[in-house]
Amino acid sequence: MTRAASSRGDIAPFYVMEVMRAAELRMAEGHEVLHLEVGQPSTPAPAGVIEAAHRALDNDVLGYTTAAGIEPLRRRVAEHYRDWYGVEVDADAVMFTVGASGAFVAAFMAAFDVGDRVVVPSPGYPCYRNALEVLGVEAVDLPTTIETRFQPTVEQLEALGPIDGLVLSSPSNPTGTMLDATRMESITAWCRANDVWFISDEIYHGITYGESAPTALQFDPDSIVINSFSKYFSMTGWRLGWLIAPPALRTALTRIGQNVTIAAPTLSQLGAVAAFDCHDECEENIAGYARNREVLLTGLPLAGIDRLAPADGAFYVWAQTDHIADDSQALCTRWLDELGIAATPGIDFDPVNGHRFVRFSFAGSETDVAEAIRRLRDWTP
Image 1 (cartoon, helix red, strand yellow):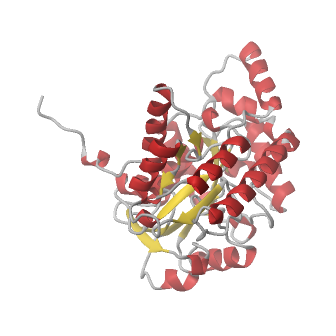
Image 2 (spheres, one colour):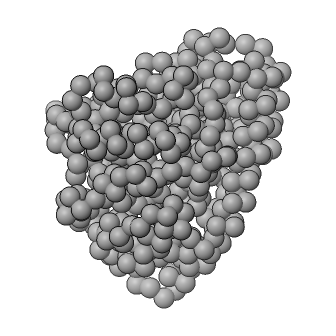
Image 3 (tube, one colour):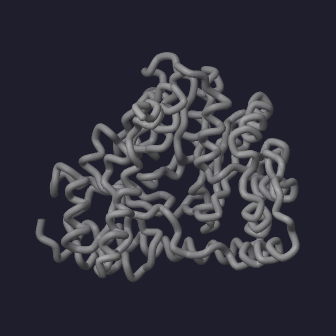
């Protein structure tokens, strides 16, 4: 057969997955790996979620739900926004998806046409760019620096010319920085004034180390907000995300959901209803991240890695490493081979300057993080 794959698959890989695969191969050969590459909690889902899922397995047929998801969970999400942010959200605005990844694809399909221009700040989550490219939407790179805390400014947006959308995360993957209320308000106001869809990735909300992260909905009810049960609630493998959409997009999102996925996993939805009663357990996890964060922020400079982004939230430290090596991918390969430390090269998050940076995740065990610092301090480049 001479036919080939479509050009849609000709996109950049998600390099962190390749790092994870290399780490797996090393472990299969009997070698130890300290996991500072994985952007997921090392803790299980809250006990209440697991108990609710067991009850559902025993008592529910686990058939399809509607494309938007089950009503009890949509109501709980709406209550969550009232309780955490003081924002009233219509339960009909909430839609559940196969992870936040499914929410991004659905939102991009509903909001943008082929040829539209959507701003993606860098460094940033690579799947934004890749998903937009697959859909024929132009991902407009907006480089950011430490001077703006690796977040975009209104002045930068104005210099780009006509655009149709902006997608960014706060707290950010990979930098951990976030927009405070003043900057979030200015960004949302600019998008609204210029008829630009603002897609706010809020999947790391709840994981902050000082001020809480504001939601875009506090300033513009027409923002498209995406969140997930993966990070704060430690439910990555349950593959359940949500989006909150303005009325103009709801019919399109429903039709896209009906045709592309039918619905998010029913068992995950039934279990997740209990997640919002498990904040005490989740906060214990956040306390563990905070301890790991302190170990990295204190220990990396002692290992000669002292140019670090402010880690306001999430569970990442974004470190400049070009004084050690000018190729972060090669550097991460050396660390894995020589030290057994798995970290993620910055090229995943910034195709232009990412070779100068490495992302360290501190979502893993406290023992692994402390041992990684010890090995880095003893390592000679």
